[in-house]
Image 1 (spheres, helix red, strand yellow):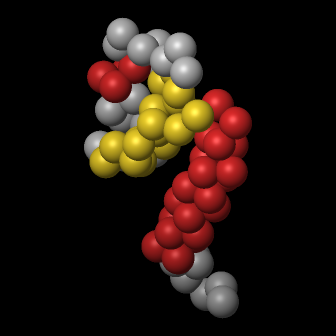
Image 2: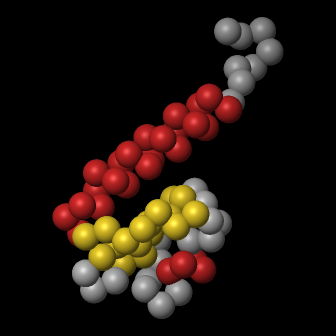
Image 3: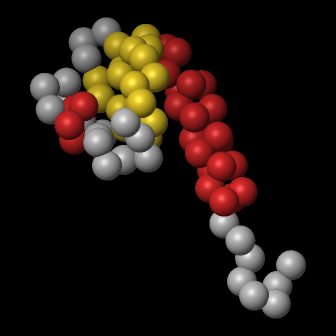
Amino acid sequence: MGCRVNGPGETDDADLGLWCGPTVVNLKRGSKELGAFAYDKILPRLKAELDALIDSQSKNSSPPAGRP
């Protein structure tokens, strides 16, 4: 998370980054900016992005040798 002044730079290394302005929350996934969302709209979008991130990471991880 970051402030509106340094937020974009502070979130560069985050899987999901967000920084708040007076009326919107800016969201990005990695280096891709996803947009600015009203405070009453950000939670569903953030949850969807988090679920997608978890899903992609679980698909990319392989089980240890000898385990299904």
